[in-house]
Length: 119
Image 1 (cartoon, helix red, strand yellow):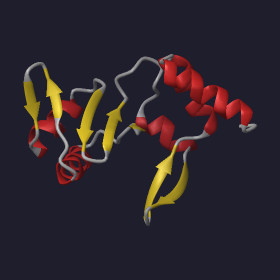
Image 2 (cartoon, helix red, strand yellow; image 1 turned 45 degrees about the vertical axis):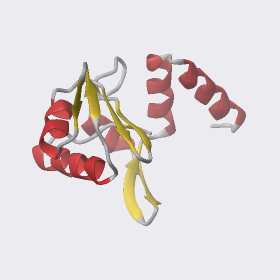
Image 3 (cartoon, rainbow, N blue to C red; image 1 turned 135 degrees about the vertical axis):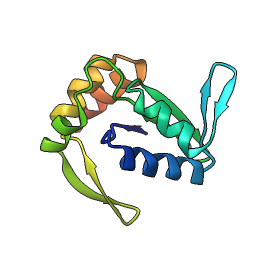
Image 4 (cartoon, rainbow, N blue to C red; image 1 turned 180 degrees about the vertical axis):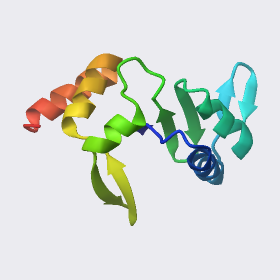
């Protein structure tokens, strides 16, 4: 799952706590960052951070070119409940912009799927 997070220290701590709770870690070179402090510090760097978890990859993408800041994304986001938790989901227009900017093979497929769905 790709996410953009609010950069405040308390929010980064919550993200890191959740990641550790699902056996998350960040591989940095030959090191594995697996404590809440080390994961939060890595995300605070502002770069893209891939957190491997027991549930799959949590890709913190605010460091990718073309990804707007959290505050900008939040303005046009809609709220949805996922597994009983209220989350902000970026608008379709923002999603399309980020997918085009990232340009990964999966992003091209996602854009085709959005077109096919009429979004």
